[in-house]
Length: 309
Image 1 (cartoon, helix red, strand yellow):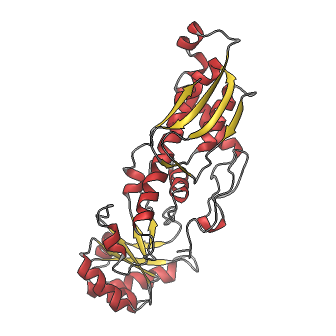
Image 2 (image 1 turned 180 degrees about the horizontal axis):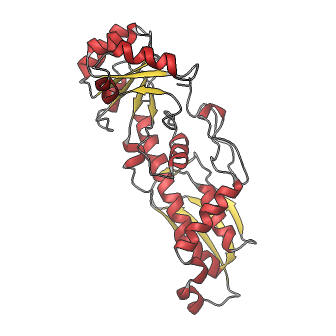
Image 3 (image 1 turned 180 degrees about the vertical axis):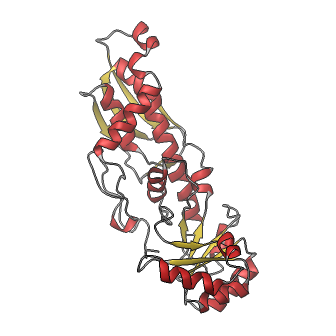
């Protein structure tokens, strides 16, 4: 698990032309798709929406009509997914002019302008829904993440995501988590070792055996984490040399006992049943990490809209 300090530096400008790999917040907020991947995703979404044959707009709006519009926040939140919105408008009108007022990773207040756009009216109308769908979904994840991050601020605990993501959208949803100030857990099953309850059941509950086999067979340097439901399992995981111990659905008193028993010999991650109502109390037990599946699988879309002048 990387030692990160989310939002240690202001996020830099994100453009659709960037082509970096997925990285953590310490290295900057970097969009996870290449230029070609971004263009392909946007075109697929536009084709799905019939945007290249928008019969309503074609029938009602003259082809030479130009328009100005503002993409605005109907509620406060953290923005993520702006490259999708820019690419969507640019795909239907390559000569569109756009001024970005609120970049990915920045918080917008209700009524703030995210992007101001000038271009052909038909193109703006046909691109509107796809641009908003991308931006609202990813901004919703960033906003939900930022609320959890705010809730534990000052405790030293970090908010992590999980693998509970939309199939095909993992890199994007984990990017949105970073935009909200969160930290990414493992990207996939090949990234690190996480020995869960069913893995332990398959080795008759023998934590030491599971950890030893992981050390022998996993790639050199791979992080080994063990999910535990009791103090006895935590002690066994520590004795076996686990790097991270996951405290699964533990009550607060038991979490505190595990923190004392660990003595900083491994990172402690709390998981299971974490909500905005209890996340602060969980962080105050002294755990290092708190993983929250809800920030990706249950985040509500951020309310954004395109207003024509």
